[in-house]
View 1 (cartoon, one colour):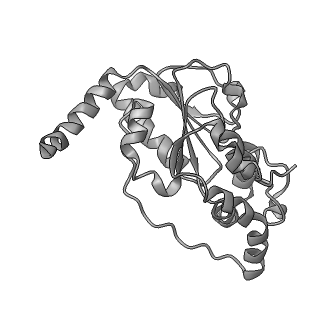
View 2: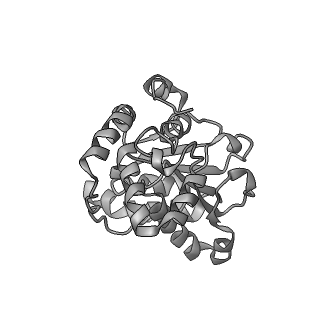
Length: 236
């Protein structure tokens, strides 16, 4: 009997996707946490269902500038408050991961992509400082991203840790109404960070990552997590 249910599961999922309500799906993140991969995989799925809808899907720096469309897929690094008045068929997948790893990725991106990419990334994440302060304080406001998204209830938000994206493919599919199939996971290349910067990063980001480690790997955002994230050191 169990084997029969296992064989029927993919068929049941396909029926769910075909009959799912049309959603406006937003992929948000604290940066460098798998959001681009997630966005592209969901966009690919949307293209198979409604090719014309893809032309409305894009990256949006400020969600106040976005128009609700369904079906549609947006990507953003914005904070959630502007979604408070969006319809109930809005779905947010918030990808999160270690703040220190994200900072290291940004540091490596300066060499790989250059200062123009850095400037754009800092704007997207509402940075309240400069690249030179990356290991002095949480200039990318990652703690605030985590704190606000994991407790936001005005629209449904599925929070997924980077390491859990592949494990929870079916959950993401059911939540968004799109058949989510990410590419095969590949190990991230280690970052070459000087010892003095690593020491600074430990001081700035370890307190944030200690809180992140207390969160489940996949969960629906809720006020119940306020106690967990209340001590996050939000940067002014």
